[in-house]
Image (cartoon, rainbow, N blue to C red):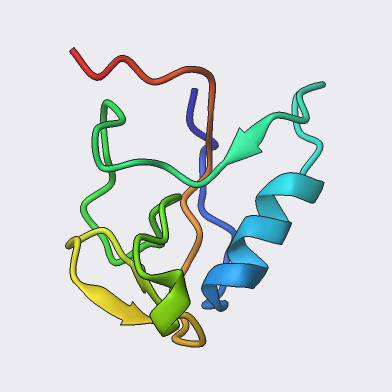
Length: 85
């Protein structure tokens, strides 16, 4: 399940993760950043929920390129399990 809109402004990867963790919407509290394999992935520059290179201060955005954690992008928000198949 996706939210109807993203978070509304550009924020860092860490703040995007916190935003999802603190979001209470439609009686749900298990919101997260999407993964590349989530269905209906938005065609925009949004943060992904996996920061493969955090040790080097990098995360991934929706075009799957590494960007600095302090970069600012919007947070697309999703909940529920992911079916990798």
